[in-house]
Image (cartoon, helix red, strand yellow):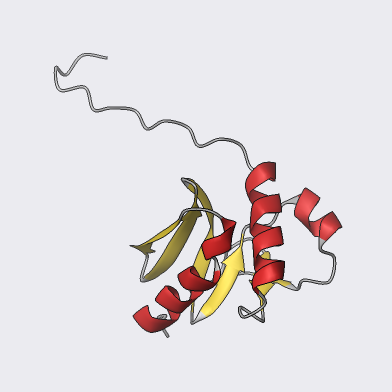
Length: 112
């Protein structure tokens, strides 16, 4: 079951205190970003945050689950109305993840 656009928009609103949140359709669901970094997935009307060992140590009680079959575990946020927890987790995870690599431009000359 795909996530509803209403759930995605509500989730983004709940994440607003974490930073600049954006999202885009990916593989029939949604990937979401904070300040330009990929931080998670919204799948089947559930919010998933990327798993990092640092965040796992700081938030040991948050359950983990894969957002889709064959995926690695992410944090599964069961209460998206807990903005304080969301903000702390997202900021902590954002800090633990490396900076996004710049995308390579297409070489239009055909040479490498």
